[in-house]
Image (cartoon, rainbow, N blue to C red):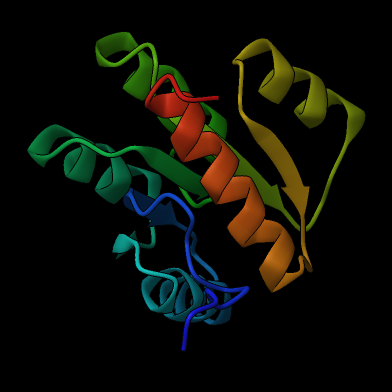
Length: 135
């Protein structure tokens, strides 16, 4: 087989996924891992911040609405130590205020649930290229 799969990552990377929705975590884990990414999955903002202290990532994908520390606050705190960290905010409850806050934080993309698999993979590739200064 000489052609790449449409679901293969063009730029494999290390991705931290933070989502309290089990089905979203399982989907992202399966899709991103099969695409060739190294994926770490957690279900709270606090666990996400702990994971960010233990190792570096090319990209975080975080749900906006999390119990405790929400996804935007995770990103604010993560950027204090890694200002160039790329992030994708996902939400099932988009609001203009949330989208504006995400834009102010410089997120790579603001994605609403449900999202398409090919769309999220393409967005991840773009974010990882940007993280590495290739985009």
